[in-house]
Amino acid sequence: MSNTRLLIPSRAAQQPDWTRWDDLDRVLGELARRPALVSEETTAALREELAFVARGTAFVIQAGDCAELFSDSGPERIRAKATALHALGDLFESLTKLPVVRIGRFAGQYAKPRSNPWEQLPDGTRVPVYRGDAVNGAEATASARQPDPHRLLRAYELAQRALVELRTAPPASGTVSAVLAPTYISHEALLLEYEHALLRSDARGGRYASSAPFLWIGERTRQPDHAHIDLAATVSNPVGVKVGPDASPADVTALLDRLNPGNQPGRLTLIVRMGAERIGVALPALLAGLGPRAAEAVWMTDPMHGNTRTTAAGQKSRVLTDVLSEVETFFTVMRAHGLHAGGLHLESAPDDVTECVLRTEDLAVDTPLPRYESACDPRLNPAQAAEVVRLAASLAVG
Ligand code: PEP
Ligand code: MN
Image (cartoon, rainbow, N blue to C red; front, side):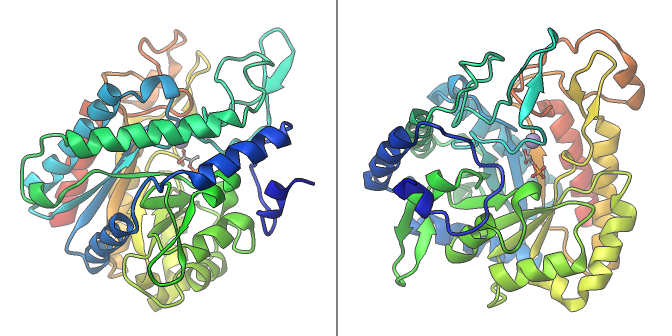
């Protein structure tokens, strides 16, 4: 057993089978010596901004790629992604006058949890599934799908370059909180070795995750006694956890206990992704079960991950009307329980992609969607994302 493995203290789901353990150890040693990607101050600043969200005096928009590609992470592309995020933030602010905290799903969103470890190919053979550019290549060949630890170093370097770009050339942003609106970055805290190698000491003798100011734990890795929640519990960053339709009040209570025992506003964000069909029953049941403890977290809606469908041509897609319906139900249920609807979590592209469709009928089209560039889940294009933001804005002030 390598030293690397000893870093991981408890059960860990969704980890790559690196195979090349010596390479992994060398890469992790190198990452541990590299500078923090983000400072403790940035992390603390975001936590304070999220405390405003907890009190209902600000709103979060978190948006960007499902799976970011290394080849789509150069300075120009990061700028395009940040500009698209700020356009959504500006739109919401102009409609509501509520300041928007802007968090990108980019500059590090390189790892994916997967439902199936294998991908079946049309010729009847299978290859290991794509787990994000930080692990393996998207091309469906056995050699591309071999996990390569050197990719972790590339992920770090691209995130570092992206952060330089975001600092030196911030996107023009128009309205209410323009001077207070940096571009925060975020990604799913999935690859435990990577996150552990980038832990750094904070001023209070604790530690923080220096890979991004905001990290979230996915629906598949949020077991309260597993390694991902252990990691989130011991860092001082604001953290998020995805909450699907089968999460029970006991599950979420355990998350509150582990991740926000001091009930600090802004520390924990629950990102609800129940699907348009189920949220109307599942979210009220969850909130009723939590009672007053529900107010111990910021609540955001992710109207993407519970609404994934397949077109007749076999592509993953999402229907805009389902996305809008989940957002509307989220706001209605939150209001009925006396809680703030704190934000939107979207998968969106800066380009006019056609990965999500407008209506359910569009799923029946048996030709491939014309502009489909996502390496994983389907993203909203800017016009579709703006429609979601407009609806959220009308519900926030209505
Ligand atoms: C994601 O955010 O891309 C994702 C996989 O989400 P979830 O964990 O909610 O399924
Ligand atoms: Mn996704």
